[in-house]
Image (cartoon, rainbow over all chains, first blue to last red; front, side, top):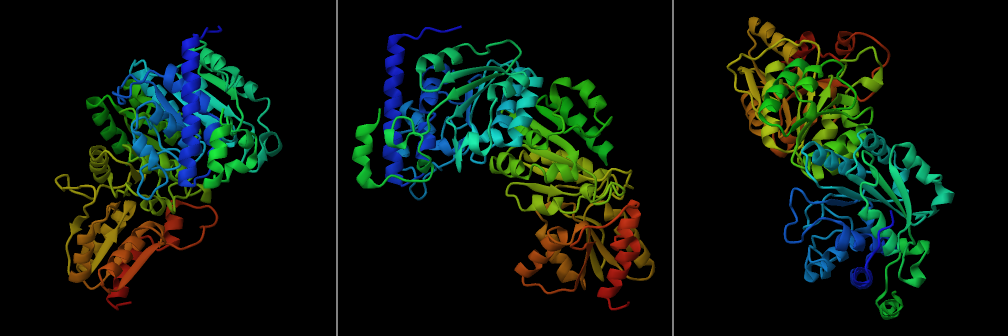
Length: 276
Length: 307
């Protein structure tokens, strides 16, 4: 089931991801905002979604048959905004106002604040249930839209997440896709030390989800997983994406503190020079 | 009241295929006909109230108008944050129907007593909050919340409450329904106490005390004008509600009076700030709280200094 990815697409995706990471750093430094590392870890996944996998059109963001994307880990909002700006859903000017008084872009996304925001998130454990409702509506209306929900690993501590996991498997919603940004860090430390999720894939499989594990920074693997939805008829898909929190900025990678720290203006040039 | 809800919902669903009913595995047998008639507009999500609300939100974000049923306590408290963020913050057409008034499940213990549901829901922006007093109010309010197309909570009692309204009465969301007029004391009632308040007003009338009986079935948006008028035109207000005195209709009325600079005698009959203990019939608990026709008469007399 490996899908070959063209060199042209691969080059384009890598460039988009680099642009997005630069935008995350520039925007967060200007705004003095936190959650930088959480915005960086899913950038490759978001890039693959918005520049390849999702059936969406910035010129027609309310198409009833469109695919939906929900950033259930709302604290990665800046990453999403930067992808939306890179993709032409929102203007660079709007993005540049992030963190300023009166900006409509909050750290955690709000429904319809801008085109492309499909749900209000910020409190963990809400996104999958809403995505389930959307996927169910698409099914019963015989529409073709699929629903992609990006969860954080720590979000899988929430009981409400598992309520939705069970129901989606039971309802056989094969138009529902969960991607877990499994960067293995949460607020207080390592996931495995705080509330270990392993055996993680088994938990999804036990709830009747077709489950794959990928490297969440390798476009070949991300695209390959996203191209084959549904992987199995009548089963929702879980993609466990192994990621690195702070990915793309070496001194932020796997460093817990960059959940809380903000960039000082003096650090900006050095940071931009290090991005890869 | 619950039958009136299902009948009214069925009428709406017949005309609008985007109207759905979700339940959290409660309402045994009551929804059988609805499910048979509209299988594509019905879902039992299981015993999972948080997901019940989030799923309803996702459906509403896809063009559906969703009625959701559970027992009042489970409907409003377990998924409070989902109600706040997913429904109210996103301002979606999801209508929560809570089954059971304060002591509808009187022998079940405090876990099943709906004592603070109205107060909790009243705090939330965009939310309409209602406790209808009879089946005619239920029907009218179901129609109105559907037309309003924004979040709503309706607490319905379930044990064959008497119909107090005349069929010709105009009942609408956000408007107090004047059941009878009078000049001495105003009785402001929410929910299934309407019958007791009606009977109390009739008894008092025979004693030459005329009461203005207002059914304040909607706690939010509150009919402020009707409350001000009652405060100005009668000698005092008696509030009657099957709810904690904190946070419900009594609090809402008191807030209104203070904001309007009105100082009038007010007696609030409700449940005091503690968990009622033990088991007993619905009437057993209501008696203890003075939520009876007699209790209402006593409160009116207190305002008129006749006790």
